[in-house]
Length: 408
Length: 144
Image (cartoon, rainbow over all chains, first blue to last red):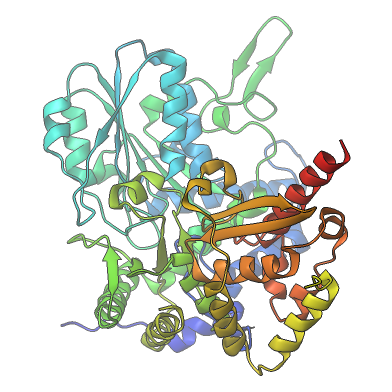
């Protein structure tokens, strides 16, 4: 087995928060699927922005405004390059993945009619279900579900058979937040395109682990959140193919998104500004770019390799605990371990782990259909990042064992 | 037998918890207390009796007998069960007016302060509110 080379000790020094204590114990942060921690380099970019060139963008003639505009547009190009989009204006800056999904769902309102069909996967986050249900309510389109199996893998047979000329849109996550499954989006995109349908991929959970090549995927829309990529909260990006973005109506009206306004008629600005009404999260966007620089300096491949080894190690160690069951045992997974101990509520385990300084998430992870599928109230979810270590995985295992002893 | 006032029961609980040096022993004791919880009858384990705002499920039922409120409860999480058991031990068998007026600072004193945060998903705050709401409902009923 090839050992992935990451200088973890050096990397951990970039994250001040990793050296703090929680309940008297050194923090073990394993809630990375909810939000990632922030390296100094990104914090520096934020401080630098407010210290040197805080200004509104795109309309000022003064130097600060020019500098802020350049930095913000530079961040857009960094996002474009990172995900290999063909054009910078295909990257719409958003407040996060949810915003991106809603922008597309709202935009499709005028394109759908009664009897049209949309497909969603059985393992979506609520944010990739609810906007589409609302779209169905507005248009009379029908929502269909790609089922999953006990391992937490999508079963494409019924999807393949169900595709027809009524199929308009397919939306699926690249990686499941609740289970860690890497979904076969390449195949789903091919099948959907074969039926003439567009595809939106929710890349929020995939982006920290897998670099999506948007041109190679030929996906129509792809959305990400900066805060899962070592960037700040409240900022993200929506990729859309130019042709789709030209076709979709604006999501919100306001400043920045117009070309000309009179009381009789407004003409909209071109891409990407048509979808970016109002003053954006300028500093957040610039920090998002800095976060991608940080990740790329380490290298996404090195990150993926290291994380895969850590996941295998933690999985094997956790499974040694009697009565521990892992939900989501797909052949292709990223750094999520969703588990329960037999007869013990996940909330109890999470509470004990917190007392031991270990941050995990418990509950339904905004994916109630997944919990209903397994007939469980929720799970404990430990989600790893490249700055986590085997020692931390060991501490998790010891703490879960401790919780088991206390609670059973 | 005369019912101990709420304050005294709370002081007893604080005393019991003060014997423990660390959080782990306190949690273990709380889990033990959960086992002595007067368990709610199955017919009362309804959605209506479910307390909102908890990540685990908590059901509470209340009866009025001779002017005093008697609580029964259950939870699917063992720590939550311990918390509700402690609350019920302090509040059950008390007059509605005393329950409404009761302070709950003792939770802090027994080292469970973190559970008092209103944003905490366990809903201790919701539990206290619910117990007091029952008391309020019975007080209103007694007055009319």
